[in-house]
Amino acid sequence: MSNPRTLQAGEVAPGDELPVLDVPVTATSIVAGAIASRDYQDVHHDRDLAVARGSKDVFMNILTTNGYVGRYVTDWAGPEAVVRSIDIRLGAPNYPGDSMRMSGQVAEVESGVVTVSVRGANSLGDHVSGTVVLELPGEAA
Amino acid sequence: MTPEELRQRLDPIVGREGAPQHAPDPVNEPMIRHWCEAVGDLNPAYLDDDFAAASLHGGRVAPPAMLQAWGMPGLRPRGEIRSGPMGEVLALLDAAGYTSVVATNCRQEYARYLRPGDRLNVTAQVRSVSDEKKTALGVGRFVDQLMIYRDIGGEEVARMEFRILKFRPPARATAEAGTGRPRPRPARSRDNAFFWEGVDERRLLIQRCDGCGRLRHPPGPMCPDCHGFDWEAQEASGRGRVYSFVVAHHPPIPPFDYPNLIALVELEEGTRIVSNLIGVSPDDVAIDMPVEVVFTQVDPDLVLPLFRPIPGR
Image (cartoon, chains in turn red, purple):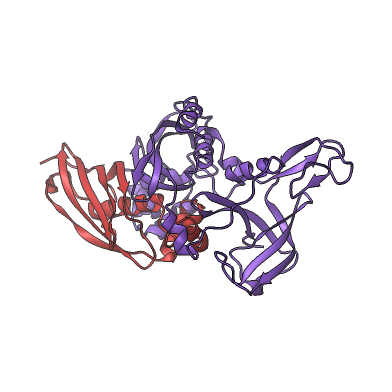
């Protein structure tokens, strides 16, 4: 759920945990993300070709993962948090039938600029880990 | 190609900035909405006019994480995608056997939020290609790319560092898909070497007689019409129609899957080629069905030009 209120800089401190978000991974969500990101690589929508290329099934593209990471952080921070950068590293693929549990923690707060570390883990391990830097309104505490 | 030869061919491409590519569409609300729907993002700064107008943005903005989507080529013919320095590097790595690809890292920095109406262009350069590394997916090389996104006024709005791994799928991957026995290797000869080298680079090449212009396949030394020996290779579009087909049921011969769908495809250039059809069941194949080539990694070291129905036809 989106938070209609935006966190103020003074309300956030290093060590704060973000609420966990469980993202179901299905063929539909993988294909929806691939097409919404204009990514027609066959491994993201065509199971036969994905298998022929050595994958066990279609898998989520990195653009969609980026989208989930961005959404996860602004769901928590609120709609007027200004995202400055997203830096992610991919690990275990997101295959249909799995679920990705997203978790995060505030790593650093520096004059209204907040660095959040984010992780999305599925049954195979960490699908994504990374950091998001965002600016929050208000005076720093 | 030896690692030294590959490095020699990569060196002049690395660091060269490609020509700016215009994003196919301006930043727009429908694509933003589709994106938000796909990733379940309900942020009203992206979706709600009233909220966005009263917010610090002063109007609707695009999700920053959507950056890369604006520059994606979409469903264009293959040839256009494989242009520029990145396309050249990918073709070289494909030819060297690193045929699979996976994205591993992405760092995006946003100078400002994008708004509906923004028209972007993207310049890309390959910053480095690693030596061969052993990874969990197979041996491969990491390719680091830098993409700079600018608006119509030339202002940089965002930049992205993108790392992919081009790798050789391990033998087990194809063993699982079939019986574990490799496909028979094509017999490469002086006559047909051009054809298989084309396939290695994901190009379908056919012979054209220099004398009378007739196309012919399979490759041979002499034109059956004018008996000329001189010829050139012409790249086919890869599209065609099922001219005829047969379904082999028995006896099953490893490593082929049964029923085995074998088709004679008439290419749109006019000549015919025998191959397998994939992505369609024998019951659904019809004479004249439009098909397109799909270069398929059937074994770790073997790519074959197979055909599949053209989606949506």
